[in-house]
Image (cartoon, rainbow over all chains, first blue to last red; front, side, top):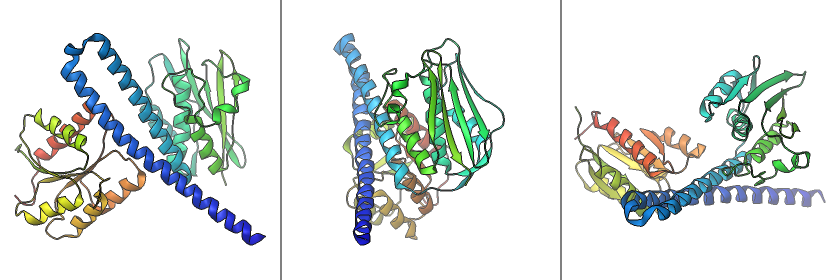
Length: 233
Length: 137
């Protein structure tokens, strides 16, 4: 009985690895092809804009936007499949520094303000993966914000065994019935043309690996706060 | 002094080669480009010719001898190990990046999606190497 369980576990592990490799490989190949398509499209636009007329140029622009979205999709799939594929590293992270870097790298519109409240801790975790968590949550809070003056606040509270981080926005809010569903892969609430529905599943998957939890409080039209915990171990 | 470069482009994808050539053709500086379709062909060219390229631009994902294999072969070769090699790939895979740096590279370029961005980064790389001194001529 024990032996069978062991075998089954081995088999599952193997299949999981294969699935990860497969997602990785396919995504990379497709990304290369997209680069080809994108270049050819740019040349047609460059060389024949006048000959083909406004409507066709408009269609080419739509194609370009679709290619961009598909590329983002593939990038997200690669990121998602990488989470499980590589083991967890332990880096010493100064979160103040990391947050500065992340906020600097996100395209933030002028009407939205991202602030870090108080001093963030220095902790030990996998830096690349923790960065994905903050990056996704903060860019969601920025991208989906519909207010004239948008505000995104990052905060932390310390308990004995873990930290609770919060990302609070004054955006459009998320109805209760979606609070679980949004963590599923490829689920979007359709607020934004560009979203792939992978961001929060990446976040959830990383936090599962870390042994942390994630939940949210939200009021429709007023805003959302995402909370997540990171154990100190 | 700015000079024109002898470049070995190792790339299997026809459209990628077209992208590169189109970018080069719009530059002021005339560079001399030799193309190889995979690592095997590239090694053939390096072994046969007396004069070596100033710079190798290397794709990673190729048939026969792939980019990483090619890189580890030339890094072990007394005659070839000095040639600066810049990786040109669509993969920003962490392991690829780290493997390449360990073997020794002169740059790692992830091909941007947009042709205009691609073109810009190729120009920047070549512009930099134009001003360099090389081991041999």
